[in-house]
Image: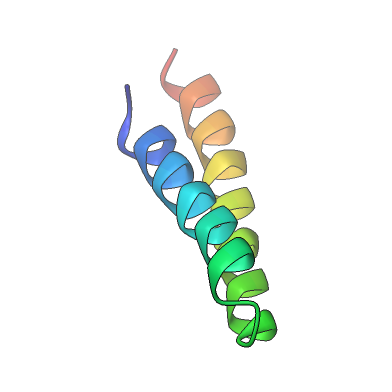
Length: 51
C-alpha cells in the first residue's frame, strides 16, 4: 500500500470516529474528510504517472 492510501484510510477513520463521538467540532471534522479525499485523488494521480 502506498502512503496516500494509508493516509486516506487513517483520515477517513478519524473523520468517522470524530463525527460519531465528537459531534461538537463539526467544521474541523469535515476538514479531515476533505484532506482524506484530496489524498485519495493524489494517490490515483501519482499512481497513474508512475505505473
